[in-house]
Amino acid sequence: MSPALVRGKFSESSVRRLSSYHRVLDDLARQDTEVISSNQLAVLAGTNPAQIRKDLSYFGTFGKRGSGYPVRDLRESIRAILGLNRSWRTVLAGAGNLGHALFSYKEFARYGFEIVGVFDVDPEKVGKIWDGVTISPLSSCAEVITEKQVELALVVTPAAAAQAVVDELCRAGIRGILNFAPRKVEAPPEVVLRNVNITVELEGLTFALQRGIC
Amino acid sequence: MSPALVRGKFSESSVRRLSSYHRVLDDLARQDTEVISSNQLAVLAGTNPAQIRKDLSYFGTFGKRGSGYPVRDLRESIRAILGLNRSWRTVLAGAGNLGHALFSYKEFARYGFEIVGVFDVDPEKVGKIWDGVTISPLSSCAEVITEKQVELALVVTPAAAAQAVVDELCRAGIRGILNFAPRKVEAPPEVVLRNVNITVELEGLTFALQRGIC
DNA sequence: CGCTGTGAATGTATTCACAGCG
DNA sequence: CGCTGTGAATACATTCACAGCG
Image (cartoon, rainbow over all chains, first blue to last red; front, side):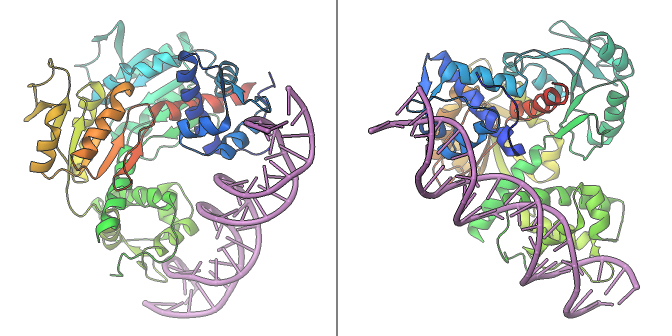
């Protein structure tokens, strides 16, 4: 009901948690749960009730005092906050193993990410068709991005190529990039850039484990 | 030189940043850079010099006042801190697209992660061989984990199966789990568990982009 | 009465700024 | 001198605790 306007300072972590609340609420709605309290939601999402109430309070007021949050409404509100109430045209830069895995990743479609183009520089790969999408040379990315009004790109190239690919995507007018290549890349300020680094996560494990023993 | 003992309270973010410093230092060492200042390293790693000096100070003293940090030594020290100065026997639970992509991911081998087993419940997949590693039924994971002294597991199953798989891995004596399945999973306290969630990252982008316009 | 929403209080992380060493 | 290493200062995030509403 309340508008999804920002009221106060929220952190990047708040937004990440909203994503996780959204996922839980999505499951709850499928199971036809009507109402949930911050206490219950905290258990399901792996956080604490105060955190949830605070996170939500940055974006509006969604609950009913005395009972809790209406699951369906809250889910829709968070969908709107996160920008998931529409589809996002997305391309994949890099048609390797990881690219293929992301292409087939069911969760993307579920949340409205539509992969409408795949690029690679390898002539062996160009021309192949993945579930209706033809792999194009990277040099054609500007046309595809313009014609299909693509806004997001997933970069899954080798590290050495990542920056050049990001530059090309930015010139082509991309608005957001999720970089999986294990290298720091730069983009102009109008492009939203985020990095996913799998080895960093693994090293978090080895750090903790090694600390445990030694 | 200085011991990699903890001196003061460090955050999880510090450890994540150490990983990124490590990657940069690794590149620098390959280019035969001898010494680097916190200023230069900050540029390459995308942070600020004070942050680097503080992060390092939690684990020892590694620099030379007036000149900077010896690249090779610092890299080795961070390797030791992160537990990367040895190899880690790892299994993959789930032989789908993402599993295959991780199996082929070059960075893992580079940093000492050795994938010595792949499991799946699908009889279609069991028996297939990936680059010398035979896909085994999930039910055999305990034997493999014990025999091959496996410590880490990458969980890349569908969401619905993830918790059962994690339970089985934990019973089999796994020490660390990196969960890619889009569901919160639980593990006993002696098992180090970490989640990677790709949609959360993407939703960070859509949140920022939608905020930009509206 | 139960639960949300939220200022105030606490706890953490980052940045500053400079003493001290090479 | 230049740069590290680090307490002190600041900024930020989380948790508490309770007023207020359904």
